[in-house]
Length: 390
Image (cartoon, rainbow, N blue to C red; front, side, top):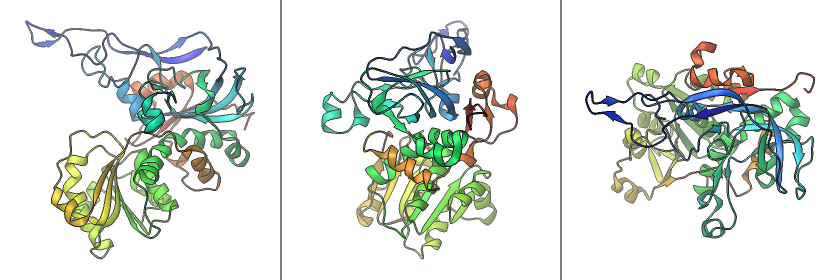
């Protein structure tokens, strides 16, 4: 079968240095290529899925980029060689002998973080802290392939989306469940949500910022205020329910800071929940603190570029808190999101900047400019939907 596989000589360890020149010694560049691999065979509890849509986001671009020749920028939990691709939806082609909740012909999406259910953390604290976890597109082969193998307990039916929207849009929605789940888990499960009518601030320019806007509005936020670095994200945020959306250039033009916008919009009360999804919490912390409502929460569901410096007095006097969060698994949230999408809420498919076939995925990841102009927040997809299926 055809698959897009990443390989490299060096991952995560320090770059080798030539003592005479004090420069990184030459190494082969990471290799991202369309290759031929054996078709996977299902175990008793596995399903074989033909991915029809798979998201191509910044995570894949960063994983396939090099910090100097032959040294990957992000090692994460990456085991090479590896087929990339985490956010996907597709059609079940085979099932193991013990599988009961999936049948050949079903359409499904899947959790990428795969927990063991047996370690102490799984049993006591939650699946997102599994000691022995595996991860699609990192330690297990992912979805940029003609077939992928997934444990059946990580799969969720998207047949309701297919029935309503057809195969193409239904699968695109299914592939977007995972990024929506990251925000859903952070905002409603871990941070315990907010009351209808309260104010939510969102900081960031990527797909997760749009997911935050859509879910906050769907949950009944009175106002959703978005602050983004990329101006082209603001019109789509408005369509998804943002009350106001400002790019950094917009703020500079009017000479205001985000906290001033928030305090003015809330008559001096501040935002009840603020979601920082750009990884710039340290640079933004003073703004977040200055616009924090009494008992307000700052939610950080992404890794931070630098450790944020906080003014603890702000949190003491306001009874506020910071809620760091990781993951998208457990708590049965995938069915809830699939139902939200089925009813028309939280539809992020307009964020898809371009659709490419599997054969063009390496170019879309490694050199997206070769396939046309895009903005930094574009979320491309690999689409292998046969028009006859739709």
